[in-house]
Amino acid sequence: MEDGRCDPDGPSHPRAFPGEEAGRSEPQPAELRVDFPVSVVLPAGGTGERTGLSTPKQFCSVLGRPLISFTVQAFERVSWIQSVVVVVAKENMELMTDIVQRFQHRKVRVVAGGSTRHRSICNGVLALGEEEEEEEGRPASADRPKVVIIHDAVRPFVEEEFLYKIAVAAKEHGAAGAIRPLVSTVIATTSEGYLDHSLERGKYRASEMPQGFTYNVIHQAYQRCTESDFEFGTECLHLALQYCGTNAKLIEGPPTLWKVTYKRDLAAAESIIKESLSGSACVITGGSAGAVTLADALQKAAAALDLELDVVSDLTGDNGRYLSEECNFIRVSVNGSCLSEVKSFLMDLEAANRALLHPLVVIWVRLCRPDEPVVPEPAAIMDVASAAKLRNILLYGIRLHQSKDPERWERSVSRVAEITSALIRERSPALVGQLLQA
Image 1 (cartoon, rainbow, N blue to C red):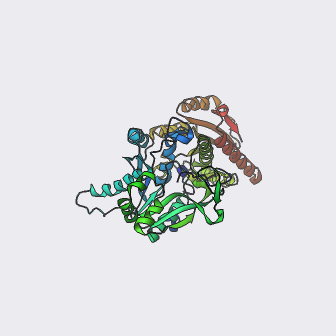
Image 2 (image 1 turned 90 degrees about the vertical axis):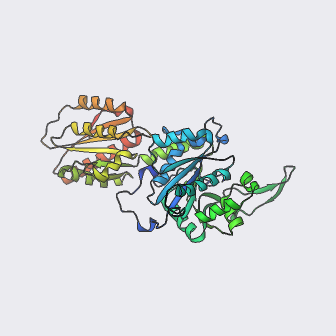
Image 3 (image 1 turned 45 degrees about the vertical axis):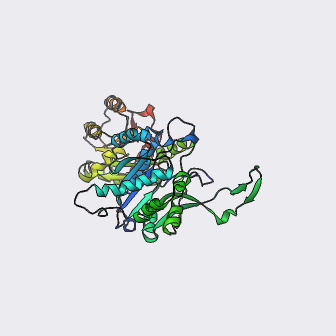
């Protein structure tokens, strides 16, 4: 699993980054639900020598957040994954525990790793069994995961759809793993450094992560393998075949499975994450009919710009989850409504104590009646925006006048969608606190 770069065109963008839960306004497809317990082991004990950095790459900051936190979040968002065991070097236990607390990871257990990759993964698998044995009055296998997914801590762009394929195949076959086409021809060299022979590239594939196993298969494989396997091996699927006779089902994975290996990959990951997080927002209407009408029209116009909008009346009850997610917000105010609605919303954000990945965008859309005079509000919004900026929140304003002319109204809504998309994408400091006219 040392080289995860199998896409000739470089890093590929996921359809949506894990933190944004793409399509959350739609019901979860039934085929992505599993009826057996699944847990994850994330080996994260590497030193990151190839990045040339003093900090191991899994702990390097990407948009103000350690890379491993994004990977953990990719699994925590999947409802049918019950726990994530992160295996780190002993000297990084405290650091990882702090990351779990600071970024409010809910399903994570941190355990100490070993001196090699296989020793670390083995520790993680054993920890899954220990969790059950610690519960008094329950058999050791009562809630033990049926399937264990093993993944690299520095592959943050794994998608739920592919995790589902791996989990189901692992349950059926005992083991399953991701593969990708080889990009370069593989050759063997002589001891003197000359070409010995080459392999026919079409017959071979690169083994990738994630890989899945039934708990019994991966547990027995580690119980039966040799010290040489622990010391020099890197392929879990091979252990399952050699020591359990389990022939893994191989599934071609998407190009988004690439691995952060070199320093330049951190910049690529940051670009992908920023673009993905800029592709959606939550629209809050307050429940008024005028605001709902505008929000629905804005949702359709934004879709044409690849901006996904979720429309809610408020952030109470189940909608409160948006306050803890990496989400941008649009607050619609109608007619006599004033800036106090935005101030109240910003207070809710502060109370949520969110650990923001990067500056969060909040857009106040002010819908005015056709005959309503233009009230000079720039000074007021600027004061509120200046205070919000200190908390890593970028506040912008857009004023829109209602129109009874359908064509003019449609053009105005489209203009609001264009401005909104640009503000979320660019996050321009120069426009913070400005009240723009649509």
